[in-house]
Length: 222
Image 1 (cartoon, rainbow, N blue to C red):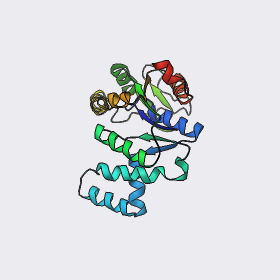
Image 2 (cartoon, rainbow, N blue to C red):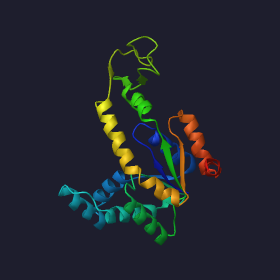
Image 3 (cartoon, rainbow, N blue to C red):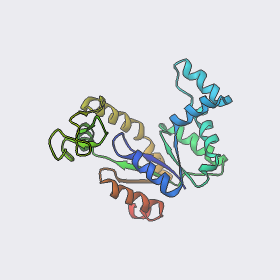
């Protein structure tokens, strides 16, 4: 089974992709990882990508499609794959479809994790962690049992990611919606788009995805 997961930063897309990959044996394909691996390998395609990036330019759709083509031919993709970070435009989606046809493969589902921007912003900006052991906390949902003392290691030092602020999160959400908005109708017309509640807790989101993979979620969503 071949999937695409759409979801903005902080929606838990990575967590769900990891779970699906481990449970079902689907390869998790990140375009960033594929680019780095190709460049490191020194393959002709990797050299092409390296030359483009060295000039500060964006890697072309053609190169990305060919990277994906090479990757899905590998043994670990034979049970299926989860594509992350691609496509970002309708043109890329069309090129991906054509490539999959030539490889005698297809996308089974495109799963959109729907979010509430305000609630997601609160979720992200409230995060902090123990600077010593990395235990995660949240201003509203999970504070240390003893104020300013880590439950796990007793440290009194905490940290927050610099990009976990309202301004940055808002910009990232806007960019995500601008990129994915045209893609959703495209995949809806192909009858493979399923939208689920990305704001539910992790277990519930996982349950919804498992229903889709099991073949019941799409029918329930229609």
